[in-house]
Amino acid sequence: MNLPKTADIVIIGGGVMGASAAYHLAKRGMKNIVLLEKEEFFGTGATGRCAGGVRYQFSTEINVELSQESLPMLERFKEEIGQDVNYIQCGYLLVATNEKDAAAFKYNVEMQNRLGVPTQLLSGDEVRARLPLMKFDDAIAGTFNPKDGIVDPNGVVMGYVSAAQKMGVQAISKAGVTGITVSGGEVRGVGTSLGEVQTRMVLNTAGPWAGLVGQMAGVELPIVPLRRQMFTTNPLKEVPADFPFVIDFAKSLYFHREGEGLLIGMSNQNEKPGFDQNVDEDFELVNLEAAIERMPLVEKASRASHWAGLYEVTPDAHPIFGGTDVKGFTLCTGFSGHGFMHGPISGKLMSEYILDGKYSTLDVSMLDLKRFEEGRLIKEYNVV
Ligand SMILES: Cc1cc2nc3c(=O)[nH]c(=O)nc-3n(C[C@H](O)[C@H](O)[C@H](O)COP(=O)(O)OP(=O)(O)OC[C@H]3O[C@@H](n4cnc5c(N)ncnc54)[C@H](O)[C@@H]3O)c2cc1C
Image (cartoon, rainbow, N blue to C red; front, side):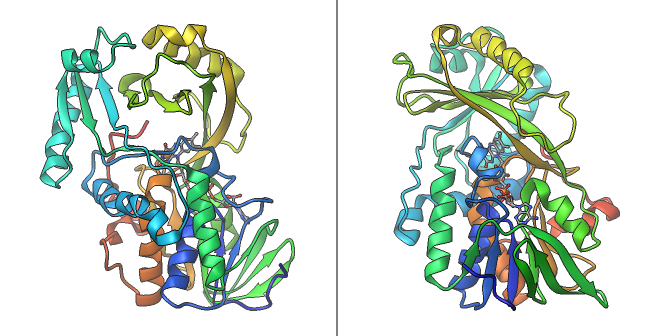
């Protein structure tokens, strides 16, 4: 597809955020929408490399509320968008092995229950009873919500991109944005590997690369790319179909069923910010040993695949929505490693912000860029 000369909006980045925003803007009737992706395929950034986990269990009200809007949109996805996204409600089971985390779990469950999320608080014995394949002798508490689960990230991106294209969105891949023209404090255009587009409105949905796109417009964004990696195993017949998404909270170690095997990941707390997306094989061994300690049957598994991707981390692990000091330069980014699940609602919220100047489905105005300089940070405990 040729790059148009003008657009009413240019959306930079074709992951879940850009695709959802393009779809929701078009659905509201906006015309001349251009969605640009630097790679050959949409959804090959953080979205295509993510673990696909979707959950209501967070430690801040705003994240729970984002999930309360977004996860039902994923449940209705096939009906609304026509694409199957394979939502498996296996539940998330978070495990605490120290008193500090156990106290935080209790607080979180109370808050989630107050907001209408039926998360259950479990004792150490209940955790062990639910996970007979795992060794959690040191578990002192757990939390479980049966509505949490896993969803296919590629299905979500492709569903939104195709539905947006049917409504006239020009979705162009292999179109890397190289510059943003700003004049008199306003966006005037976007330079790309395929040429220039004149526009008064840019939406930055470049995920881990959003800081670089911000710099093109002269806007500094507090977003750092941080590598995270995982691997999958060959089929393991012992793992039941209803095996939950298990998180060993203190170790940032997680397991979920992937096909007939397992997907296993762990956060490297010593990882330095950077754009390297190669698997760190040394850390993979650390991850494997930790996984075997928790789940001895992993020792007899063989690796089916492995990959790394980038978290897009902000100082308070919450996203950034809305405008900047440059008129027309708008943000929907910085989801800090849990944005896939919030993609549907975030795109909808951006359509409201761009077309109506305010958020009506859910007030996320506190998640603006200014909060960092004004010291209004929000603390999230449940991000691994
Ligand atoms: C290993 C890992 C596991 C994760 N697990 C989960 C999980 O279980 N659940 C969950 O909800 N979230 C998870 N996440 C986080 C989630 O993947 C992200 O928060 C989310 O996908 C961000 O979406 P995005 O659209 O903002 O970014 P991306 O999907 O990265 O999309 C941004 C796009 O912008 C493009 N781009 C960048 N610069 C330019 C440019 N100059 N011009 C044109 N295009 C450009 C990129 O190529 C990319 O495709 C995980 C992330 C990782 C890395």
